[in-house]
Image 1: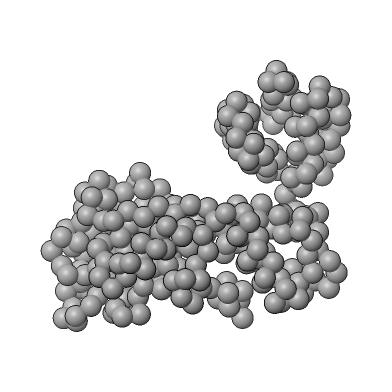
Image 2: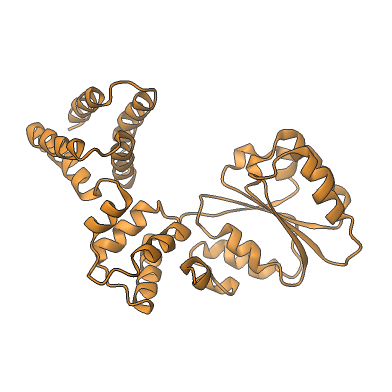
Length: 292
């Protein structure tokens, strides 16, 4: 059985993180308005919507697959006009709907007695008339301590031997997405030895964050030669430039270092545009050194 199914929350109380949102849902679940769940992937939006559907006849659609006006006019309209007492539409990734489809959706929300739970990552892509007809609930990343504790419980239950650094690496490579983390744990569940962070990073083909941290640390202490030596070791291992930059960006974000974020972001853009990446790294390190 897939871990993502086996360890999916069975009740609203089981959902990790976002306790303010959970409390609101518990208070209104028997008679709720249209809802708009927004926030990063893997924070429990879809799971929570599923836990609210038992007393409803439910239609679930993913707007990234069915994003046009025809789906709204046919499938959705037909369901909303069914003669049943309690109807619920769960529309995932609704920020993928075209503007025209959103206007049609807005009309159905106004004229039918169907409840809607809309789910998106980017609320800026949702037209204002829909936002104004919903109670907007914003989901945040699951706190690291709570996230890690849950992963440790699952590892213990599945007899997965993994170090604390290994769990940190699982959280890092999954970008705080609980589904992705469970997929990663499933991938190592048959490994008999103790899994560490190095194993996780190699399995996912991205550089170890500790090595990237050492580059920044060497630049901070004016040891540019050491920083370049470490960078060359990564470069020779054929890591993607984008993966190195993504790792550096996460480090800067965790440090709340806005100036460092600006520099790394600038070079991410340049490298994504196809500019010679190795030379760009040298230039980036030189700019970073001026911060210290």
